[in-house]
Image (cartoon, rainbow, N blue to C red):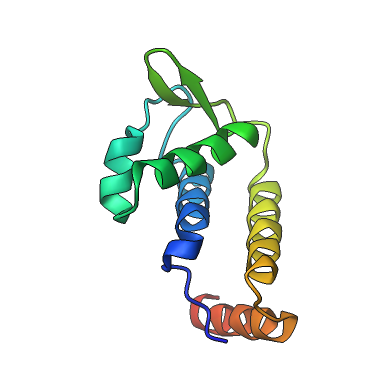
Length: 118
């Protein structure tokens, strides 16, 4: 089975992973206002509900905070880059398994990524 993280089945997960990566690398700063769910939905070409679900996951994992005035980056300074990376990888692997991707395919994909980017 080919890995395709751009399908509608994984759209929420893709948004989640993209935002965690951006938050972890400092693209967004603590307290910074994030784009609205509507804006995120348009950028990723998904429904507002899908974008909202991704934001809810980010909130439950402590990355963002919802307020009456908008959505903001939480203080994630206590998370080391290694912790964030490990959480992302574990979450991605679990998500892949839930979508029927075999451990062999996951391992193969990780090996390809390591060869290309490391």
